Image 1 (cartoon, rainbow, N blue to C red):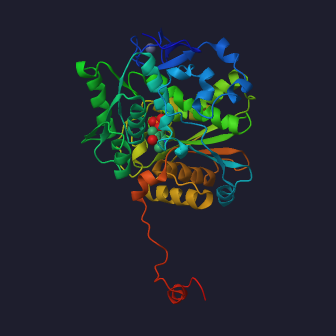
Image 2: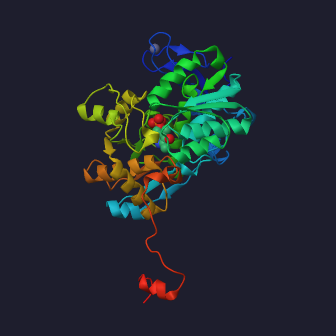
Image 3: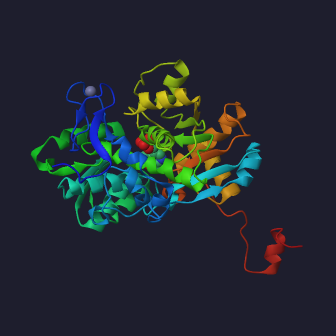
Length: 415
Ligand SMILES: *Cc1c(COP(=O)(O)O)cnc(C)c1O
Ligand SMILES: [Zn+2]
């Protein structure tokens, strides 16, 4: 079975270029390289701005550029997307920007992280391919989104998470009543286990969103590039700052910008891609600094749990995108991450999870090191909601008073 007709024409190996039909596979039979969706370029080139603008206020407005979901009835989706692009003038002023600085706030999605985009693509592909159950290995947000999507369409979901996740990430999966499997190990252990489970008879009829249908999954992240370009009035930002876990999000935003140029929906202006990692899990940063093309796996630590992938599948492609565009990669330690969360919150009104703290802290660092040009329009991506990782913040009331004016005066609130 293959997915319904769409602008997608094949799955193509990113290493050797071998082509496959649009089925549920993710690795090349020739060289084990990762597969990516290939498109019919003439079909893409016929897409117009007006056609997209006439679409719904969610990711499906870009259906003419996506591999699945052209027919609304074919979608298995919470209809995420068209999240706010927030003009961050006060943050920009604090960092010394003279050009506009924007926050693409993807905490506004149905399950409060960008993962709804990729899950909508994966599950719509899975539906077309005849699946009725879904699973994933997750650092938290993916499990939340898979569980919610499955609840919406009535599928069984089995989500596998490391057993040490934040309490709210666990709640935000379990409320949708999936089979929620906590594994005593790191995300990379969980991922290895689900690869093995995917080969068993019991899971033969299950779509693993980030395994057997991963090529479709990954295309969902492109909508974060398309939306920013459209929201800026159909132009590319000069600089973007993006968090890295597996690296898929970063590579797909870069790919989306390239596609928009190639098919003539935006002018061909240069863009630089900057990556953000947590110091507790910085294998791509290390490779970038060392000038290596390969990424050496690490054992993750630190509070940015949603980014704690020690063996990032798209690491080498991240290095490509960052080097090709003239960007860079920065790291933030746990204290930096907390400061990044506070800085964003108090200057923009956006409450980011730890991944957003990493990204904002890295933005500040890249500016300080002169790697980001403050006279160029810049977009920083907030990929998740702060309430889900609120436990990392040490907060208490600034004042504590009795319900009287006397007490308010004693606390210095009035004279
Ligand atoms: C998954 C995730 C990322 C990174 O995604 P990759 O595509 O794996 O690099 C970033 N931020 C948040 C909040 C996430 O949940
Ligand atoms: Zn290959």
